[in-house]
Image 1 (cartoon, rainbow, N blue to C red):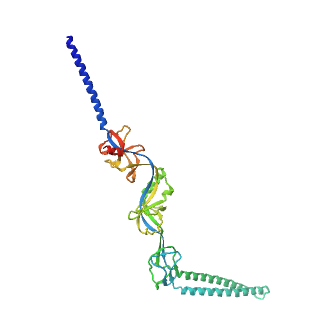
Image 2: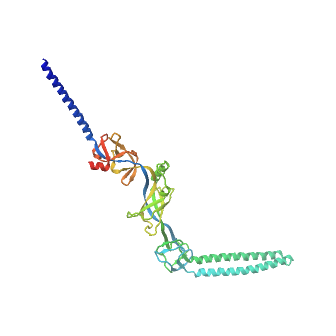
Image 3: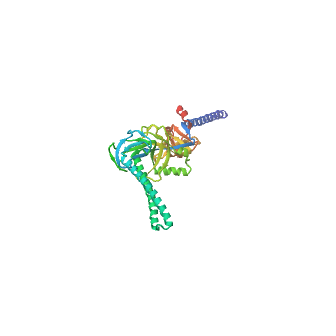
Length: 387
């Protein structure tokens, strides 16, 4: 009996050792399997930074000054003194109206002044004589009063004649039609020999000032209200120097070489469009901008001091249409986040909620992961090389 029990205990010990060995190998294999299930993903670490927010608005080019040339006296056009389409200077003669009638009026007024001055001298001498005679009772008080009144009337006649002369000289000057502003003049709507009248409805020509030039922009009232609320809440900083600068994009998509300045914003909303008009002024020395031209202007809305920019490739939409993103949690698993976005900035989304500075946004390997899955986070380029 004792001989048979020894082999039994030996076999039992051997079996236990084999069993323990098998369990250790199973646990080791399981751990290796779990480690192998951690999918390598490419991540970008979010960093907040100051960002200047801009807005592109549609606009139309408008002349800074327009003057319609109209005659201020009646007469016949003798000559046109400018080249159609050319640049004219303020004060330059444009038309000559027949001045003969106005020259005659000036001469008549000068004669009336001479006559009034003679009448004054005669009336003054008579009034002074009557004053001496009145002192010795040689004339009546009425005679003296009439002489004094005649003297005063003669002085009034002189003032009237001087006013008439000034009017005649003004009309004579108006016979030469001058440019009220500098700019580019258009075609002439009258020719020499045409009869014109003062303040007529039809303009003789039109002068348009193209340098500087205005661009009238339109911005929706809802956007303007949102912007004002963001500035009031401290979400945006308003930099006056940046806010006044405007960049212009031409009809062909190119950028206009001169920067403009924002002049003002209307205080009323257009009820037909629900928009507010903003006006910007641009230098236009090359005359590239012409009135009526359609352009787009980039204005600065403000500066966001802690902006989070997420690459668009790392943001998708859920079934509700909400923007979502996958980030790596502290335990190296996938965490789904619902975001709030404001706008696109280049190839990025400006995220206002859902991501914080330091979060690791997954941008590569998204098709191989799901929320809660273990991942091995690497910088985006390294993850791309390991896959």
